[in-house]
Length: 340
Image 1 (cartoon, rainbow, N blue to C red):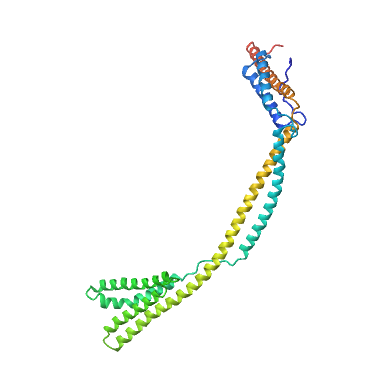
Image 2 (image 1 turned 60 degrees about the vertical axis):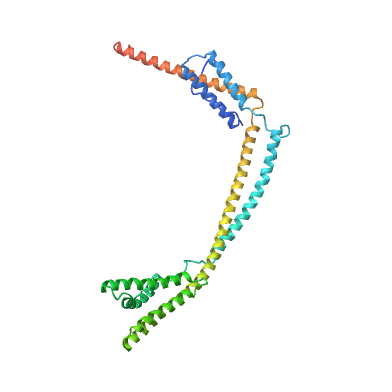
């Protein structure tokens, strides 16, 4: 190797596998860097020997024989796995189509099912109105019978808090007791409270007008309790219907979610099989176009690393020439300008 050409790059031989060309390119750059780092402008025998040994070792490490399942047990196992993977791909495709069909059916079921919507409830304003009516009716009795010895303002405060507690207890009893074996206990308690308040009012009535007021207020309390019972019965019926709709809707959604999970798993299985087949095809491409012998690959590798070394030498020479030219120009300028 007497002359070196700058920017010389290895060209991949026809049908060369990508791994072989990567070896050549890497060795070419390795040889070029070796020359640039040393700064040499001539081929050094020690460098040439070291580069040849390095290239030969890399070639021997990379070389693989051509793919031949008939003579290689390893290749035969690879071929058996490849055939099995193709069979699995057909099964995975069929499974994916089946699961996608199930998913479409599940999504159609979700779209057609009657939606449960929001859970039914009694408006808070209605419950507050019933609580307030019971509290207003009971406040005067508590004020007259239970807070008689207190200051008037303190007595009315006590009566207001006590009557509100009575009304809230009745309302909460209806809310929490519906649907249980004790569902009639709040109704009984409300009637008993109304009767007790009536007895307290009647005992303090001084004339027929007070007696009529006692009867009217007690009827108001009992009416509020009966209205609350009616509202709770309607709420229980609506809740039962809502629970059934929600159960059906939830079952459809869970079926849809399970179908989506099955589809994702089938896609993942198909992707794994496709990747295995693709890797096998890449291996076939590389090994079907591999060099016929390790000696042939070693020769290509040695040529690539020495060509790179030669390019580095050429670049070193170019830098030296450029430096010498710059020195001469500077010396000429120092002497008083260019000569004729």
